[in-house]
Image (cartoon, rainbow, N blue to C red; front, side, top):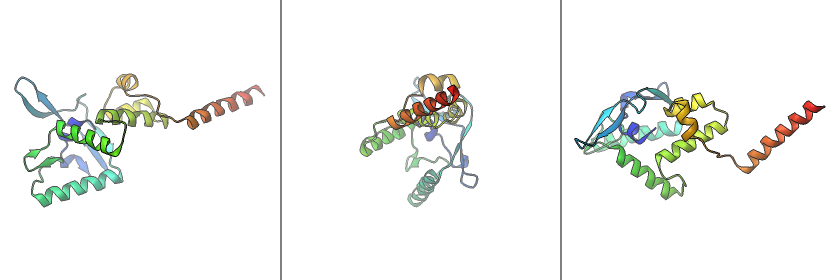
Length: 169
């Protein structure tokens, strides 16, 4: 999810029973009025993200902490002052990446890596772009790069050579 989508995420769109998150809202910033507001996602299309076990545990912990501190509200990411803005989420994510020694230092870089890993695993560009909320064209031109290791490339070439050898026989 984009930082703005995380800032706009409401508990109503987290379905623990059916294991998905509906991404349908995003925080935007009006530079003239100098204020934040919630609107549609970047491409104005809602999408579903599967709720994995780790994220489910994390979200339940967030809900527990927010309830304990008395600032549980409709937004998933909140504190005593209300909804947390995308800039804070972005900065927090960047700092956690640095602390963990992760090369990718932003949500955007992590989204690129996730897309690239999906593509290397054989996920079609249509599905990958849908999961990330892009058009297929944007996804292919801006979000895909090689994340495979040397052994993977050796295996690919070996398989191709094997197929060619068998076809020649």
